[in-house]
Image (cartoon, rainbow, N blue to C red):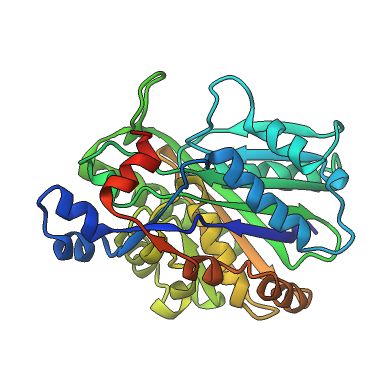
Length: 348
């Protein structure tokens, strides 16, 4: 059985309220907040990028299991939209700083906001086929958005790392699937600083078509229905989309609520769905099933069914003692104004 052995999260402590962004552009902050169902977002520090954020999450994941050495990692994939180098892999930098050694498969992945979950699927396949015993999948991103673009209100920074393997998993992977198509709702050409998007097109024919399609396939594959799950997790580009998707599929607000970190930290792109899963694992009970579907523009969704194990209880105690739960990260924050935000995200 392939499963999650450990996970680690990292959310930069800097926050900006959506009202502060709206005020800078003479917009009504309350209208923006109510429209997106997001109150504030996490912002990287001036000396942080996708590498440093990935490294923080990875170190946290390694510290979650006693006796787990960096050298046991046989594959390391980093999914991101904001790799600092076009040529020079993020994964090998993280591997070097972790002390993984040289005997591992490293790769950088890009698929908008689902690059991290693509890494989870790839590692699950490598473990399931017997090629490796342990691998790490990371989703890490920094806020990327053009000033005065609608993305500026939600694009955020955070990182999540999952160590997957056979030995004493805290959550078993029961099934996974994907749903993909050529739907260019969001793009950034080589050499262009900021991404572009197709406005409302990103919702109905893009996000919802893929999330609903992937979910239907996952229900069919596992012969399950929403009532069979205690929790659900969906990609969170804003606060409305995951709530709408859950409702359409037949999930309750109670099943979705623990994963909704977007309300307080925004959309950290490749880390979004993965950090939603971490928030659920932080509070889940052993023996619970989790339904999870990511989304990446371009476009595609990855779906997973997880079942927590008895080993989760001890891991949760370790997470709290290390001050590394998602809730604890969200509570450790320092607010900045719009000028400081521009300095930290756009280096002006």
